[in-house]
Length: 489
Image 1: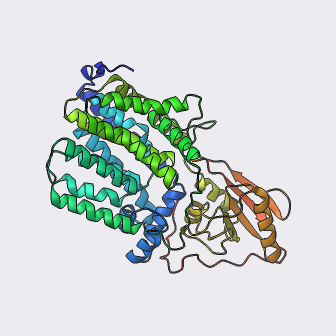
Image 2: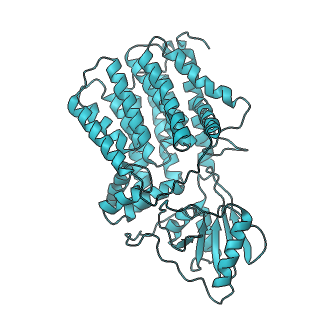
């Protein structure tokens, strides 16, 4: 790879062309957010934020989540202002548009590079369109960079980062290290606020006594392979499995080399700048250590490595460090991948829960007894239809999921046999499932709603009971929640 500074800096976009392109980014981002169909993790955060009866209950629910409270409080506040049905779109729009404004007007990068950052797949889609805590974390991170030259102004935002997510706490440490490397004096009240916020964040995620991680234990080699796949996606953010498929690595023989490509790019760009090199290369290694020692990160988490490298490029731009050709090529490739992902997202749904809801209504099954497998699979359909879903194996109705149970039905035969046993004990019911039970017994397939970009299939089955009538309704898994108003589609 060449170490020469890229000549693109000398052939920058004219101001009028840049302004037109930024407006195109805004239009594209708004279109992506307004047409986005939420998946279970997004619904889970909203339901906890809105249905928890008070702050104490909300914090208690987060002991099953592993996430600090800032995103949930943000959604709760927006729900009070705009209504629960608009809170996630409002959150995404506020954060994404703020990020666009900050990068377009404050990033010390050439105009073409700022535009590439805004079109980059992690910024445009992963953390701009999908409504999760990382969306807020990205906006805070770029706001910190915009306030960098002010001794005190950036520190309150640095202190907020650990309250978004553990990974953003690590990002905050990287930002502090970069400030130290630039010989900027620490503002001790800000350091104290960061320490206090980190302690609060750590306390808020102490697991409940009955918490069971959704992640099954993984062997170190399996964690390493998953990390390598994620690092390949950082280098070239293509998520593909027989077609566009979110949160899966592109299965290609070049995948291990793609992961190495990021480290080469970061190594070349940080030549002679040891702290920046330690941040750019050390951050993904910290993630690897966590994956081996604690639990897996998904690709959507590992893509935060790309954001950390953007932080390094931002600070280098402020110091007039030239961008090397490999970094410029990486930015351009990430922008092209972002545009491709946007095209996929605008032409097919992200999650097909709305289509599943319409299918249930078209079949006239809204008043039937319903079960869900896995237990979180029907969250979106339940919100959109107000149908209560009992969780398979649980015997209760989860409005949001408390992770204190792990399904034991690990193959189609076990699922079919469990349904048959339940049918023998009571009335008929319907099942909405991501997985297909084995054929036979009282289970009859009704319909299948094909997956969207997130790969989640909605399968509808009727299970005929041995007793007349419908299965008795199940009690709520978490009693005392606030009622959720009807959502439109």
